[in-house]
Length: 86
Image (tube, rainbow, N blue to C red; front, side):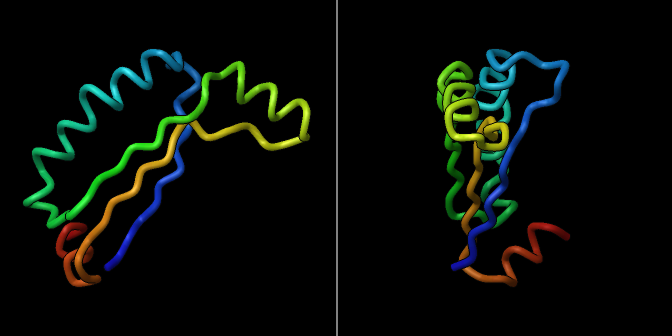
């Protein structure tokens, strides 16, 4: 198995609400529809906490700004990854 992990930050000109709406309702279904052509076995979206919660963690622990989310894509083999990227 091969898993790619993408750490996401939204563009500064897009609100968090709009980012999550698009990611969940538009981007996710596009990936699902293309999964066979991409040879992807699994696609996971991990959405972050509410912005206020993330800001509290950053402030209280001196952390870097939080990602807006993480995407995981799974393939059976490296050959399938290469085929998907071709």
